[in-house]
Length: 195
Image (tube, rainbow, N blue to C red; front, top):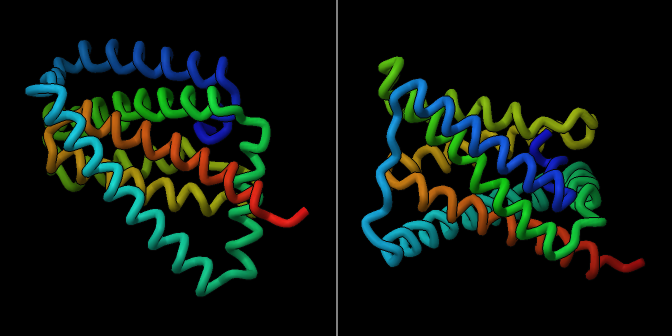
C-alpha cells in the first residue's frame, strides 16, 4: 500500500502528514523520545552513509535477481517501475518526504517502543518492525507481491542502521533520499527501454 501512495504528490504529502501525527501521538503515549542530532553535518554524514548501505543492498539484490532469474525478475521489475510511470520529479520529492515520515512510525515508534516499552531485544524489535514495514508495502498483484519481501529486508537494514547510528533523523534522510533515487531509477529504466 505504501508503494501506491507515493505515486501522487498530494497523496504522498497527506500520507506523510498522517504518519507524522500518528508517530507523535504514539510516541507521546508510549513516552518515547527521539534525541535531536548533535549537528547538521553529523546528521548528513550518517544519512549519506545509510543511503550508501541501502543502495549497495539494492544493487546486490537487483544484480543477483537479474542474473539468477531474469525471466521472472525483469518483467516484475518493469511492472513495479510501471506503477510510477505518471510520477513527476515533484512526485519523487513528495515520495521521499513520505519515506522519511515512514521512519517515524517503523523505526521511531515500533523499534523504539519495542525496546523501551515492551522490553524486546533491539534485533527482535528491528525484525518485527521490518515485518510490519514489508506488510505495509504489500502489493496484491501476484507479479509484485514479492517486492514486499524486498521491502521487509530493506526495513531490517534500516532498523539495523537506526540501532547503529542512534539517529532517527539520519535514517529518515537515508530512506527519503533512497526513495527519490529509486523513483528516478524507475523513470530512467523506462526511458532507456526500446519502444
